[in-house]
Length: 215
Ligand SMILES: [Zn+2]
Ligand SMILES: [Zn+2]
Image (cartoon, rainbow, N blue to C red; front, side, top):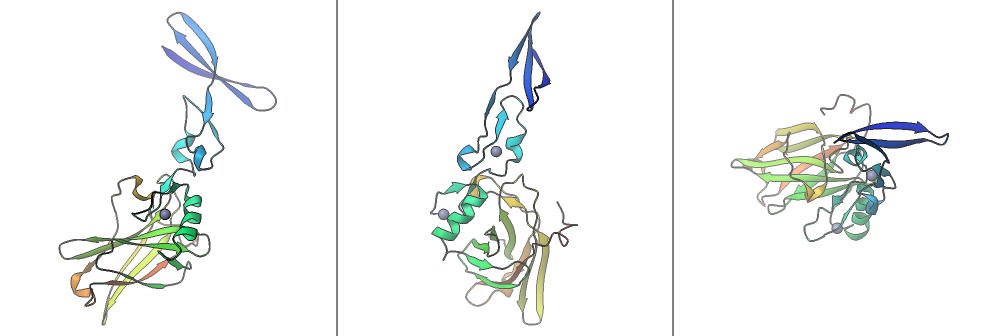
């Protein structure tokens, strides 16, 4: 069975038809349009059931709340509102383009950062390797989104400092596996006596600054 498509303008838009060829018989059928699978998260698009490019890049794709004891799932806008109303004391608020001093406890795996300007959520992720801790920042959003934020991480000990300059990748919370690309490795000797990782973080939202971001 083969199928091909034709389009016919009707003055108001384009109606799409599918021609299905089965043996010697060709049948013209109306294309089947269905709601986007992210309708429950606020998307009002309808998509062609057979030729669906929209859902791969839909900006309403679900993201999960980063807190491990919360099951909330919603679009990134819904998640921003959820986090600022339900967990306002569980993350750090910050302003773009301004440094923020943060501390991640020995037993903490991440810190949630929420931008005061637009509510966008970021995760400062901490991992443990044999010789130290890895740290990097991701933006909570659909992984299809190409939006990037430049960021700086700096860890200082006495006259020494370690610094990472990178750009965030989007990651929809715990719904997908994530393979980090860039990270800062902070040797254990950099940690304070309490085992806390102390960092200066700066996240930039300037489009010009991000013009040559790695993709
Ligand atoms: Zn959609
Ligand atoms: Zn939550």
